[in-house]
Length: 340
Image 1 (spheres, helix red, strand yellow):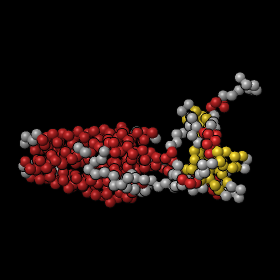
Image 2 (cartoon, rainbow, N blue to C red):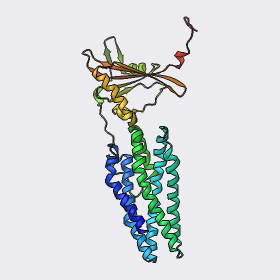
Image 3 (cartoon, rainbow, N blue to C red):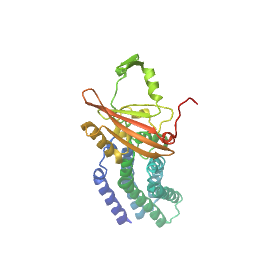
Image 4 (cartoon, rainbow, N blue to C red):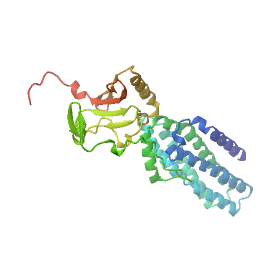
């Protein structure tokens, strides 16, 4: 028994030493980010296993006194808090992974989570009603120690890197916002996570009219005009910051106001950021002035166009994204010359 736990303890220490090497992106190092909080909880869980559960189990093996039984009972009671850690993972993180076609964690890890939940409850029940079956207690507590330790490894070496690779910053914001409703295990977020935003400033826009080369419009007129176009428009400035998107009645791709002031890279899954960066690099260098894509999306055939925006001196000002459902256009036949 002691050898098995010592081997598991050695593995966990090795994992902790190499954690920063295996998880190399920045979000998990930001206090309050969901992954930072998950790892923070894992550290407390691991500490509880090694400094409390393991120590008290060894004491129980030597002597199954009432005091040693009570200490193990107290340890298992605290581990019931694992349900909050696992529930956040299952109900907040897994659905986003499924959105990207990743079902392994839902199908496999959730099952193991339930085994662990049942194992903790069973060990607690056995301790609360201890009748002298010492080996049954040892087996139950050993199962909890090994399985919880193994789950920490799976999360930090498989699940969390996978999630960081696929989820966007906007999705992490939603997970962080909803985490409080479920709760935390043994500890909580170190701070409230606030992703960096580039502020536009309240005085940047006038409340009056805007005089352009070919006319004058009020802000209200301009906004309504853009929102009534049968296309979706998004503008990214020269620093790759999202400055504007039109808000028509039937947007093809959902946008929230949270994207304003964020870099466009943070609006895409990490695995596709390199495509965005390559496109912007070509636009900024002058190698390209536009790029078109077309995809099937639900019941729509979507035409996505990107245009370089330059000023009169040919300086790069930003990029315009223009998205349109062209299914109705493709269905047009013949001519229509009069009002029907």
